[in-house]
Length: 185
Figure 1 (cartoon, rainbow, N blue to C red):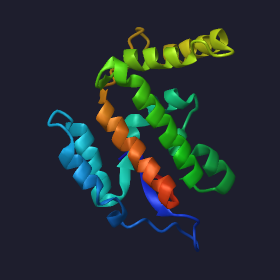
Figure 2 (figure 1 turned 180 degrees about the vertical axis):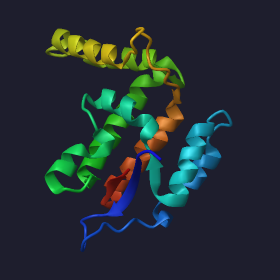
Figure 3 (figure 1 turned 90 degrees about the horizontal axis):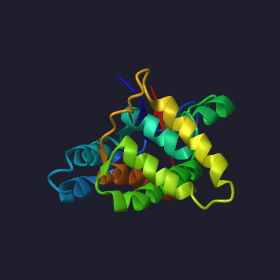
Figure 4 (figure 1 turned 90 degrees about the vertical axis):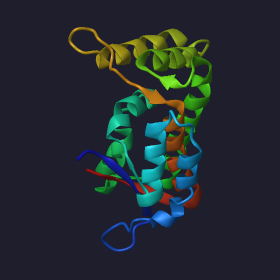
């Protein structure tokens, strides 16, 4: 099964969150149609969002956690402990969208394919010259090392810029329209 992030009405009325009608995301179908032919996963993601108002995020959790320096970002773990519901608020959707948008922009010089190596390069570049660069770079290296397997091999990530852009657009849409995102397991 996996983890889905489902757009829901904010705030909750009653016992449950009401899902957002997929019509709120119908223009993602146009996005899917306008992507280049080689952007199959991005087009499939956009098409799924257009039909369901949902993003299947299982494959992105490790990457997103690394980008944000936290664990469980797309699982809404902080909200789960606080509210008993695994929900990402509209403000947090804006935060996630902004981080993904900055990453996509920072990755442009490395090409269209996002790999473990290019993610490492983008994050290192972002930290260089910061006030606590040396400390932050050591922290980053420990995070990167933790993602390697027992043989020292890096994760075999292969995403496209377009795919991460579609993911960012989903969270931006939720933030802009005041929707929350429910983490459905």
